[in-house]
Length: 191
Image (cartoon, rainbow, N blue to C red):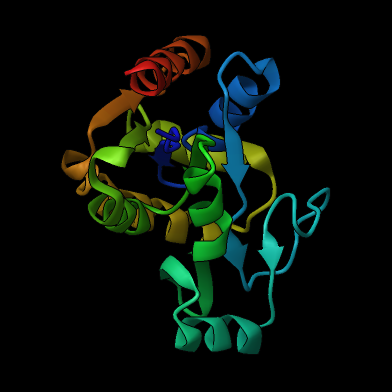
């Protein structure tokens, strides 16, 4: 019987260290994981590469793919700004026995978990508190004060969905958070 791959869904409000945690685990390469690249209609930030960081799409391309049912999940995270996971990014990999990690928004994570059931595990990365999150976002230096407040407001909303995840990891200490997430993932893959 051919092995079916597993799906690991990781979600977090912006600024909680999700990408750093995933990047560290992926860089070490101790777990057999492939990263699923999300799609978005936002412009690339400095250092981001199309097809690696995200699939950067125009507004029209994104809307056409929604109409075609090409997304396993998508969300208008901010007015006019969409993020989503292309069905093609995960189905073939899982079917061929690959373990896939998804870095997606909170509602999308819940939807993917519902669709994939026991084949998927969901992990929510939370900040220690909202004030720490605000400090981290300001420290990035990439967003205006207005954008930071928009992200903080969104984070407060998203934290309410953490109860719908299989695991919640609070990123108060980055090394400890990485270790906790990696252990959850390793146990799930080996099960």
